[in-house]
Length: 263
Image (cartoon, rainbow, N blue to C red; front, side, top):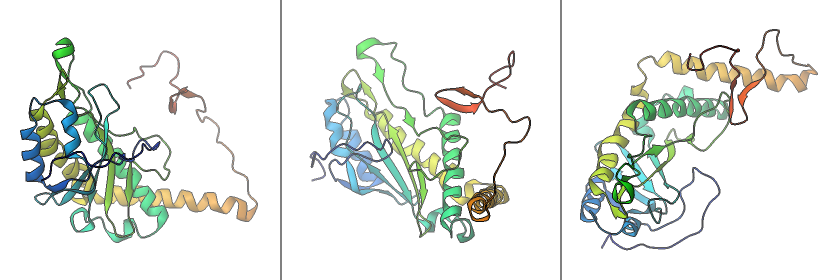
């Protein structure tokens, strides 16, 4: 059957890479049925949904969900997951990812969109623990916050075949230390498809020229930086540039005294 925990595997220091766990898998329908069968059961039963390499295919939306080693209890580190959207579904034009520089830029643009969609949907908000130990917990989906830099990273990547991979965490929902299946099913069947439809396919971007311009601008910057050493040039920071950072954990520019931080 599809039950059973499967192999244990070792941890991975990359916060975006799913820890190796069991390797169940099947269709979206199989996953939903499995989750429903777990309702109110002991939290470790979540190990049955692990699918490190087989995946759970959602044919309705054209992507596959992979679930790494499931967290052992509601207070453990969230479960690392990834969605892979093949080019046949994603449909980003070849011109946007045909070189490494463009693929990195496109992945960065998609990453920012995924993060914004997560915030807009409120998917990053965990259940209130107002009910105490026996109350609902978890249920939030998180992806690493983008920075002002465009760098190769693992949160979102574009393969040499145009497939889009987004890596994130799900804090598997619970009530006390029992599985809250209805919430887990909502994440799988409603929230994740919205992420795909609103960030991981080209059709999500009403103005494709904005995506193209971003990719081209990043490529131009990369070219200019590479010319500095080759031509023996030196770059200077222009007058008026704001160099101080907001904090050690926030690389956005420091706000002037008295300004509204939210503006």
